[in-house]
Image 1: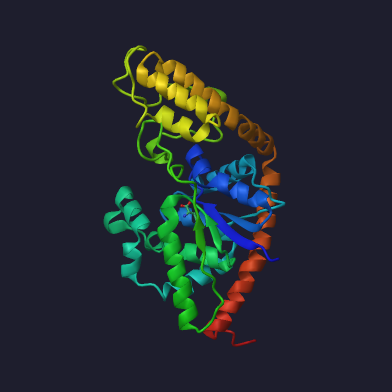
Image 2 (image 1 turned 135 degrees about the vertical axis):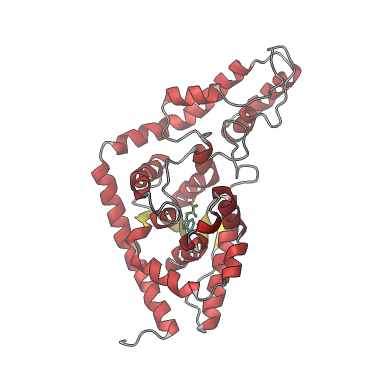
Length: 338
Ligand code: TRP
């Protein structure tokens, strides 16, 4: 039986946080360990450069952090090919061919990119490379003929655009070389973790994230200043659990959901203080994060071995991507010399 191929990845613009874990890393590790897939996991440094062209040091430094986060959560280079986007030249050539099949208007309509452009406030200085990054993402996915792409909910428009590129290419060159992917998303309600401050999204730029690499002390401090119910002032006051970040986290991280229901009842009735419930959440999170933190510290002792792992993964990835590129050139008719 041939295994379905997975391609996914992250931009290295900082360390990964528990929102990333819930939104996609957890799925990737589970899929990897099921043994039913052949996973390719890419650190998307080229994509990260599209809005950091003048700050490559940030990307360079984040590359190893993301690699360590991957190893820490259980991505295993003997089961998954972990590689670096910039080291795979075929991806650039594929991107160039695909760009001719996508209109500027279509790129401007991509809702995820549109929202990012707004949020980053580029105005007239929007880099062309940023606008077209969904097309380079189509190259990433199709170079490996991936059918399964485990990502966060916000990536669905990217997959839609990839499928359009695949259809346009296969149609234009009367071929079946490219394969349409589907997304693989987190369970309902777990796709988006709010930030510590109660903001809709956990993100580095909002400074409201818990990182996989946070120490026990950092974790405790962060949990203790989490947003709860602003009207829950005295221990005996009845409190709200809806929109209360502490309970949102317990909903998704506590394996003992019967206990969470009990705690919610107590909190609603009054008599359960914020400090106590936060201490409980800290213990739940710390139990999950301790093994990750410990594995991370182990791998961090030998950065050279991590780079060697990435180099090896990139070599394997190049073999696969170059094969697809040869087929793509032949489909266009650019195989003049055999
Ligand atoms: N866009 C992803 C992110 O924001 C990274 C990425 C690049 C990716 N190419 C991909 C994800 C292909 C899935 C498939 O981090």
